[in-house]
Length: 219
Length: 127
Image (cartoon, rainbow over all chains, first blue to last red):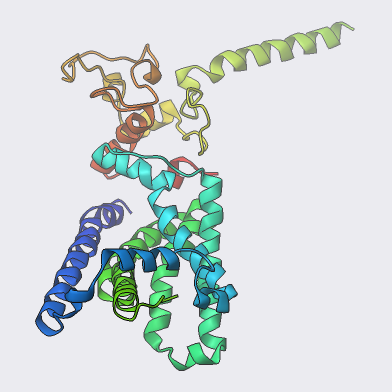
């Protein structure tokens, strides 16, 4: 157990963060380089004003026509993404590890609140899964990779929930939690989870084209 | 009547003895976490004597260390007569790590070095 823990919390953690941050930088540089090479004209109508206006509008729940058209999905997707980002960053157990390793620490969520937010992430994952299986227009564009990506994201939260409560097989669950978190981090830049970095850019592009070129709203 | 008095005396003595011994190091079964305002996890299980026997620790200073003002470990001096929280506060103070971090580094750090003992959160803080 010590050797496994030392490996997953040492070299494997470094590798996961390296792939995460390095991968993000690589994908961003690559994207800008490709745009510059093939569709340089895009830069001519990119606008901070219309970019931020569009991003801001789409960040408001029910702020766009599309959000209002799918209220269930809107509630699920906002709940999911807020809990997904906030819970791991402000979880006491995680901040304790940052403090131990690097002498840095920050505000943390009460464990009870983090527990509820974890459950919300899992419930939303179940909602997305059922939606993929049941809703015809979603089912039509679903491939096996969509389920793999969903599993990659759900796994750290399911194992984290079970490890926190120590209901069964605690050491195995704790190790599984660490490994699944590392898999998710490493997968973000190289799968469609990269929408974490690309969605603001897509939104900025749409906002700029609609605002500056078509003089229309994109929501 | 006399019998009842005897039993009562025995119970009182027993309670008194247990109260004293419950907080002495020899009988220690959990790490003292009373200094924390609102701890979110249960105090760490720690049977002082059983631990040291199993870990073959005879020198108190292995855990009860003393550092001088320059942050250098003072050899041949130990601090078992003072509580951890006398030096380690709730927040970091210069080079002195906060109490929670000091506990974690002292216990988990040694366990990692030795390849023995608990290292996962729930192994020390079970519900």
